[in-house]
Image (tube, rainbow, N blue to C red):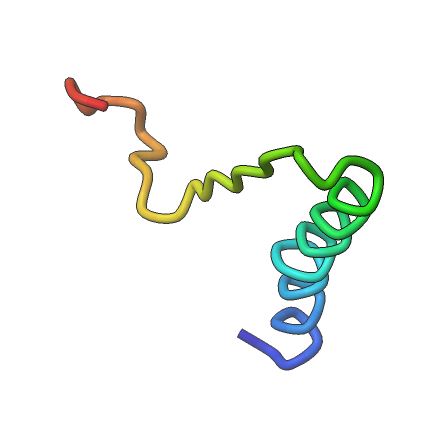
Length: 50
């Protein structure tokens, strides 16, 4: 993966998620933020289990 693609991916996957979590925590400290990753999922949608 080219460096520019890797940094764009990091901005989207990590930096944006972390900033949203920080903003939500500042707005409501009692809030629970759960990040669910799609890494390792079956893109063919042929798996029979979840």
